[in-house]
Amino acid sequence: MIYGLYTAASGAFVEDARADMSANNLANLDTVGFRKDFMTFAARGPESRDVDATPDFAYANDVLDQLGGGVVLHRVSRDLSSGALQKTGRKLDIALEDEGYFAVERDGRRYYTRAGNFALDPAGRLVTMDGRATVLGKGGETITLADSERTAVTDQGQFILDGDVVGQLEMVRFADPSELRKVGNSLYVTDQEEEAYTGTVEQGTLERSTVNAVAEMVNLIRGFRAYEADLAVVRNLDTTLDRVANEVARLPR
Image (cartoon, rainbow, N blue to C red; front, side, top):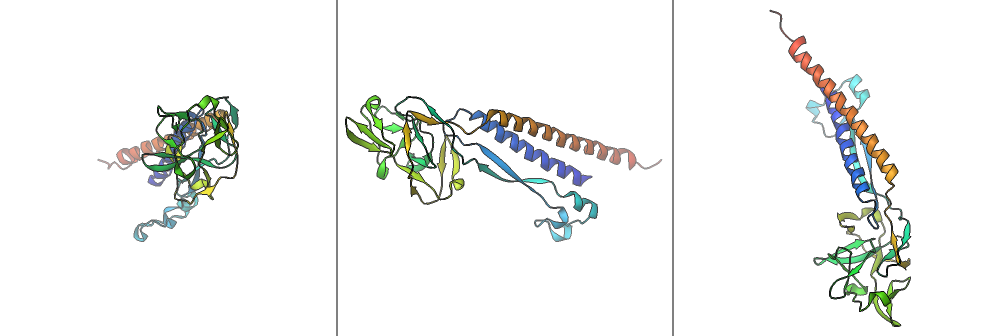
């Protein structure tokens, strides 16, 4: 019976984590370049075959072994597909058309992003929309634009003003994009070696989020129902244990 409590509780923990993930995906429905997260799960083996169980306490039971040991979170992964491209007409909106990332710098550290909704700070430097990270040019140089409205961006990421090249975006790719780690504000970090981005970019365009609102709402509702079912099992077992302790085991007078 205690075994059932642990099994049901493990399911509740997993569904709670999945609900948080779906809620975060929905919150980023309109975030430029956002790639949704999804979870994978693994079945936990019964206690008698749990590799972490202390041998002296590994309880074996043929019936319980058939039930398994519940479920555990395996890993949180990221959707690697590209979002749909949306025309905005804004000069500093730039979308990557292939798998790659813009290089940016914040507080002296290098980050990567697919959010191409850039802006200019008071000094005319190209920065991310929140102004907290500087967009890097080739060789790590800062890109400064005197007039963003008259600046054109080529499909290779060059900024052209009055026929002159005034900047070049630093764009990179990685052998295994799934290993990039989210750190918030649409930024990623990784220990992988950078490779040259060989794709193209499009000015006046943004990459939309890969979140599907309907699918995430279905996942959220399904997760809440599973969570409630797990908690119902926990409550029923708790009530049964209470009766066993206070009624069945009561000594006759």
